[in-house]
Length: 146
Length: 171
Image (tube, rainbow over all chains, first blue to last red; front, side, top):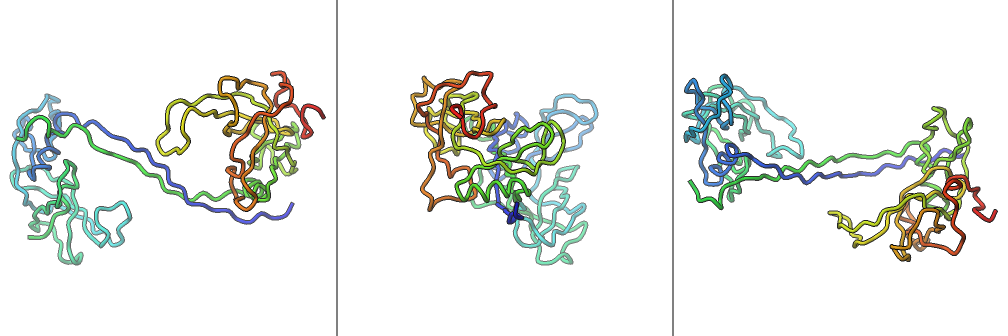
């Protein structure tokens, strides 16, 4: 039996899931579609963004939605030198924890910047909205430095 | 807030797995032979079972398989299903028949399509044969055989399915 040649082929396996959002995340995404960002007030008065359905301390159901600002401050960040295909940007960018004005906890999103040295903890950023909003987290295309 | 019908209740959350598949030694050999229009299996040196497509080892004995066995493109229906519901991304129009077929000379089944048949008449033990694409279209693919179709040979008794030699029922 002769040595076979090496056979190699690219495959793609796709699972085209849709997921129910539930009422709270649904409200958050609906707000994004309308170019607004909402959080929810927890039992200790902290405003949590994105909103969660149950209180992180008491497990009580939460319902008091609060509008928060589309600007905020970088709490921490990680610079992505070589973006992957599935990343939201195909040029170097930062993943950042962003504490929006009016919120008490930070939210993860991407920040566009020309260079890593332009970004710093404490830097002010502003949401850049997508041209067309559909009710998804990518309605905020990215944040940019103010 | 927007009105009720604008409310977001579902999101699309697809997952795509992109990967490269490298055929191992045994499957590569199988596919290389398949490109030449030859179906080959591998025989276990311990239990004599012939595997197709071969994986290079016997799943029940746990030993390497090296002996190559040329198989027939005639087969016996071991089990089948009639697909009536369209499958996303699958170009074949239902209803169609998918069957586990045991090639003559092998002991385990492979899955392929049955066509040129009356779906309601398909049955276990039925004799079928591969209908090949034109030779110019042969590739490293089981799609070289478009489908299997029934042939005029007597049914194989259930207990004999998976025991026929390469020469088939008559041999």
